[in-house]
Amino acid sequence: MNAPGVQAGHGEHGRRDAAAAAAAAAGTRLDPWFSAYADRAHGMRASEVRSLFAVANRPEVVSLAGGMPNIEGLPLDFLSEMTAKLLRERGSKALQYGGGQGEEELREQIVEVMRYDHIHAHPDDVVVTTGSQQALDLVAEIFLDPGDVVVAEAPSYVGALGVFRAYEADVVHVPMDDDGLVPDLLDATLTELKKAGRPVKLLYTVPNYHNPAGVTLSEERRPRIVEICRRHHVLILEDNPYGLLGFDADPMPALQSYDAEGVVYLGSFSKTFAPGYRVGWALAPHAVREKLVLASEAAILSPTMMGQLSIATYLSSYDWYSQVKNYRAMYRERRDAMLSALSEFLPEASWTVPEGGFYTWVTLPSGLDAQAMLPRAVTNLVAYVSGTAFFADGQGHGNMRLSFCYPTPERIREGVRRLADVVRDEAEL
Ligand code: PMP
Image (spheres, protein in one colour):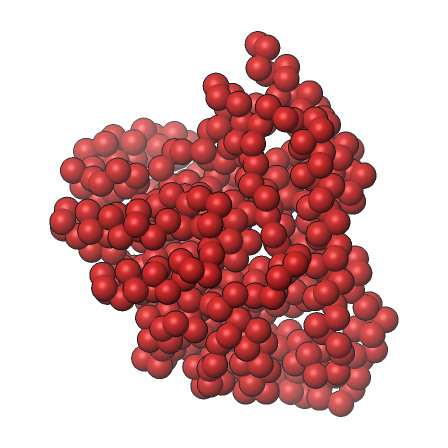
């Protein structure tokens, strides 16, 4: 039998076949290529976040849904001049193909950036990717066979769940509390899965300013998580796009800093600089790094040269850390606006208190269903993401993720006020 929380997997062929037959009957009417798709494509669907984009972006809707960084404060004059100069002086390189692992010049700077996370790495062990999203895909591609188990926090980043689904892995969630992933529950889950004959390939974790939960793994728990995974021979996939965006404290040591051989660490310039460049990276043990490069070359030949050289120039010629500090100050103000609006308008709910990043995780009064309520919220001109998007096993109906990164503090307040109206109406139904 499946362990608790295991997604419908490969042991459930009967149910899957029936569902596939029903879908095929409907699918062939709409898509003449339906029967030609690989099995894994049938499991792909638009995430709840993506399908919301169109409505949530209408100007009259206050969107507390998306995780788009607020790039309005970027130094556009500097960047325009920098880009013109880059093309003038190094255009023949910036517009050409590059190596599959990424530019050494940038990898050296990435090593410096990771020092903030207490990581001491060599540029040879860094692979530049098309955002950390591609790194997630590459790690899944080289490690996951259909039916393999990935353990992830409950809840977990929707984009990672989509990748694991695409490789037909099963996700088992382990609970968090206000200090992040709970070590004893992780240990128990790994032991139970081993006993059930289902060894775990990866622990996927977002230790800092979690998307969507808003919590951070305490420093005391970090070596314990690493020790547990080492004991169970489980590779840790540490995803850290928000680590530099702490509001009050410096970053805590990355899990990678405790065990360089047991962790693949993912970083990104999307949240500390700008997502449009599409530059992220993976830091991996030697042999893993070689596989990642081969997989990446097969997928994209080389990461964007224009993006890499732009970021390398920005890091070397602009006070990039002062930009990070600007982001922190802006997001802190928005976090405060959201938490005080929640206290004022929605005291019957509970929520996490993020110390960095973009998100808070709200638990609704019992009996309310965030997924069912969403159409009514959008009618009332406010959008959020239902908690169900962040689980592989159907949990999350009583939760929602609220993002404070994009709207102004005034709009956040108005959005939470509208949301509270919807919650109150719903509770009375
Ligand atoms: N991981 C997490 C936890 C994220 O929140 C995101 C972006 N929302 C990503 C990875 C992907 O970011 P990017 O590809 O822009 O680096």
